[in-house]
Length: 256
Image (cartoon, rainbow, N blue to C red; front, side, top):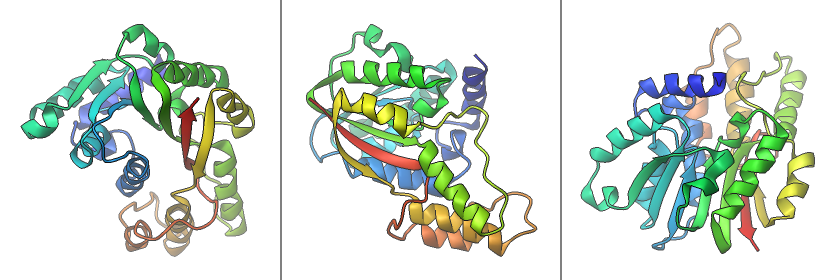
C-alpha cells in the first residue's frame, strides 16, 4: 500500500534516529515517558506493536526489566530495528526481539500471550475506523486476561481542540498528515469498552502542544517550517500537562 511504502522509505533514516517516525523528537520523548509511566518495574512480557525502527522499544528495554517483542509490518523498519539491537549491551539485547507482523492479523503470528501491549501512533496509520476496530480486537487477543493495553494514539476530538486555539490565535488551522486517520473517540471508545476496562485517558502532551503549535508559531510568524527545537519547545517539554489541547492521548486499558 501507499502507507506501507511511505514507512519503508522512512526506515532509511536509520534505526537510532527518532525522526524516522516523527519530525518532533521532543514530542517523541513525551510519548515514551507517558508509556513508561504505565509499565511496572517487573519482568513482564511486553509487545510494542507498530515499533518502527525499534527506537522506542529499545528505550523501554533500557528502563524496564521486561522482555520486549517489537512488531511492525514494514520489513525495512524491522531490518533497521535488528541493526539497532545488534549494537546494544548484552543485558538489553537478550530481552528484545523483533518480528515482521501486521496489526490487523497479530494472532496469526502465534506468539505467546503478553502482559502488556503498547502502540504509539500505530492505529492512526490504518485507513478506516473499521480497520482500527479490527486492530484493537487483534491486540485484545494477544493479551493475557487481566493484562493491559497502553494505546498512545491521536484523536480527532483532541485535534479539533488544538485547532480551536489556532483559530482564536489567528493562526492557520493545522492539517493532518496524509497517512494519518485520527481515532474518532465517539466511535472507538464504546467499542473499546466492550473489550477492556478504560482505566485512564491522559492528555500528556497538552502543555507541549499549546507551546509548540501556538506560542511557537506566534513568536515566529514568518518561519516557513516549525522549529521543533526552539527554546519554547525545549522549555515546554519539561512542564506538566495542563488542559485538553493535544491530539495525542494515552489510553490505559485493562483486559477483563
